[in-house]
Structures are given as C-alpha cells and as structure tokens.
Image (cartoon, rainbow over the protein chains, first blue to last red):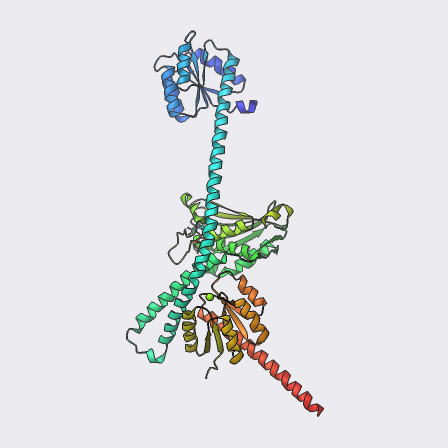
Length: 387
Length: 146
Ligand SMILES: Nc1ncnc2c1ncn2[C@@H]1O[C@H](COP(=O)(O)OP(=O)(O)OP(=O)(O)O)[C@@H](O)[C@H]1O
Ligand SMILES: [Mg+2]
Ligand SMILES: [Mg+2]
C-alpha cells in the first residue's frame, strides 16, 4: 500500500496500559499513521459513537468491560469497522472466539510491531475493497434504474403522442361547437334570450378548457418527429438572443432582467435549431415562473469539449431536493391547474437526449437554480453516432 | 357593407367536424361546401367555383397531401389551407412545399383560421387579377394585328 493511503487509516488503539499505547502510537506515527487512544472498552465505545474508525486494535484483557464484550458491541453498531484483538500470552482461545464473533484477526502479546502494522494495513485494504464493491453494485443498480426509467418514458412518449392525436379530433369538434354557439349568442335575435349571460359564461369555460387540453396535446405531439430532423450550423448565442425575444413579454410583465452571456470564441455547431429553441423556451419560461417580481435570470452559453453548454439560472423559489428527480417526469407540476401541464421538462429532456446531449439541474431552496444543457456538435466525427 | 363570402370547400373525414365548422363559418358570412374525402374534394372542384380549400391531412383513402398534389395540378389557382391533428408540423410544412397556402393545428383557433382564410383569398384574388390583365393584354395584342 502507498504511504499516501496509509495516512488515511483511521485507527483507534485500546489498551489499559498507557505505556504500551503511547509507545505503539509513537511508532505508528513514524510510519505515517496517526492513532487515537482509549484506556478502556467503555472509552473505546464512546469514541466510536462520534468518530467512525476503520480499524480498532483492541486489548482483550482490561478492567471494566472486556475486549470480547467491546468487540461484540462494535460489530453490532459499527459494522464498517474492523477489529484486531490483542490477546494475552497463551490465551489463543480468546482470539479464536474473537474471530468467530467478527474480529478481523488476533495477535498475541507481546506483539511484533511490523506484524501488527501489516495486519492493520490488511484490515484497511479489506475495508477499501468492500467499499469499492458496494459502490460498483450501487452504480449498477442506479444505471439499471435509469435505463428502466428512460425506456419507460420513451414508450410513454410514443403512446402519449398517439393518444394526443386521437384526442385532437374530438377536441376540435367541441371547440367549433362552443364557438358556433357563442357566435349565435352575439346575434340580435338572441339579445333578449333568458339567462343569456349564463350560456355565454358556460361556453367561455368550454372554450378555455379546450385551450388547456390543446396545450397538453400539442406539447406531447410537438416532440414527435416523423421525418428526418433538420441539422444546420447553429450559432447558439444567436439562437439564445432570438428565443429571448420570443418570451420578452413574459419577462417584462414581471420586470425581470434577462442577462445573456456568451464566451468569446463560440463556434457554430451542427444541430437542430428548432429543437434547441424549444428547450430554451421551456427552461427560460420555467425560470420566469419561479422568479419573483423584478428578479434576475441569466442565460450563459459556453463551448465544451464536444459542443456547447447552455445554462439557465434563476434566483427564484428553487426546487426541493425530493422533487429533483420528479420534475422531469411527465405531468409533474407544482403550478396551479391550467398554469402548468408538467410537460415542459419532460419534453426538454426527451429532446436533448435525442440530440445526443444531457440536462443537469442544481438547485438550492430559496437561493439559486441552474439548468444546464449540453448539446453536442453533430458535425464532429466523435459525435456522429448520435445522429 | 356587405361582405362578399369566400367560397370554401371544407374537407375532413370527421363528418361532425365538417358539419359544425361549416355552420360556424357560414355564421361568419362564408359559403361552405362540405366534402368527406379526397376524391369528393376533387369532384367538387371540377364542378364548382371554389376560392379556398380547408383540407384535413389524415384521411383514409387518398390522404390530404395526395389530394393537395392533385389540386395543385388540376386547379393551380385554388388556395389550400391544411388542417392537421398532428402536432408535428412537419407534414404540414411538407404540404407548404407542395404549394399549400398555410396550415393550422387542430383544434384551431377560429381567429387564426379567419386570418388565414382571408390571406388565402386575397392571394387568389391577386392571382386572378393578374391573369385577367394578361388575358386583356393578349386580346389587345391580337386586336392590333387585325
Ligand atoms: N427554474 C425553476 N425553479 C423552480 N422550480 C422549477 C424550475 N423549473 C421547473 N421547476 C419545477 O418543476 C416543475 C415541472 O416543470 P415543467 O416545466 O416540466 O412543468 P410546468 O412548468 O409545471 O408546466 P409546463 O408544462 O407548462 O412547462 C414545475 O412545476 C416546478 O415545480
Ligand atoms: Mg414549464
Ligand atoms: Mg382526419
């Protein structure tokens, strides 16, 4: 093991003989290992409460609770800690019992220093190995979960688009019927119709709700591309400026300053401008919704290794931690019914992934929120696979 | 002022839709002829003077794009507004390349539809006018030869 790694070992020496402990600690320090010390089993356990340890070197024969009792408590409460027992001369039975109840190993006193150090290092290597395995297993579980989620969303997207299309036709009939009746009510012959105002009100509500339903179906369908998408050279900052124009009105109504920034040397990238524009509209309008009156939003464009990144930041409400994964799910919205369909980010992620890129979000409640999209340049050889 | 009605041919396989939109357009002072598929649309165009066709894209049999193709060959001066239940604007844009005047997504906003109708009609009138002038010029030229 590298000396650098040895330094990282968190070690606790437990022995009732102060002299033995301090000599051992000094020799360990010379080899780069800083050890904490405890004079009894009780002290050892109380230290472990607040200071997690990698390795505990534990004397078996101590006044108060014995090393064996301390060991069983350590294995119970601090499963990640490895214990090396120090048994008295001719007390191998203790050592064997210790291993049965979970000790890493035992050494008989008097111990040979290098032998002990070797054991400490071995115990630490075991911990590192287990940690790595655990991380790898977690990573596999996470990626698998993500894959399942992505597939499910893709299937859902196709299904939703099909449904949306089927709904548009009856929706159109409802829309024209309500509109027709509304136009009749405008006529002179209906001026004195009893309860005319009520009819008008009800028809307006039908019209308004059709509008809401249409927003949903059009969002869902807007994302479906049947034919080959267009790819052109896109100046991302130009696109940002253009998009900012499109939603200027919304920002102005809340007196929000939209700050647009770009890196100096920004090269055009080959991508689909319409789709990037839709992504920008979704992110910027979310930022406007989250930002209080007279707030500030910034959009920053920067070159990356394989393309560009666009970051949309605001200092609005923020996204609570427990919502961070959910916000990308279809129909998740914290906005009032009619104000948000909850499709904006779902569609955004689908589009960005189709373009071969990724979306990231970072948010601190009440401080700042930043959505960053990475969009690859599809003109570059290494990105061609994403087409 | 009396509004001169636009002669509209409304083509959609959804009969309920055709019926109610026709009523609404007539209420707004237009003249509407209904058709329920592409063939019926072409047959009517052969017989009746029409200014603008409102054409559904997704229809069984001859679809809207095919119908549009034939309209533009046989009646190039008739303007066509495409209507699509598909949010994907791409078929509609493909239609514009084939000579459609404009397109609308279903359910359409009525004011949008009216604006596009009057745009289409204006374009048709300008073209009719240009053709009339060209014919007059030709007549005059012929007259000069006598
Ligand atoms: N910049 C932001 N700051 C705080 N919360 C946000 C931000 N962007 C998104 N959210 C949260 O994520 C939710 C989902 O966003 P999404 O854009 O998908 O839907 P929406 O904005 O609610 O509706 P719409 O479909 O109209 O966009 C929002 O309702 C909001 O709670
Ligand atoms: Mg949104
Ligand atoms: Mg149809």
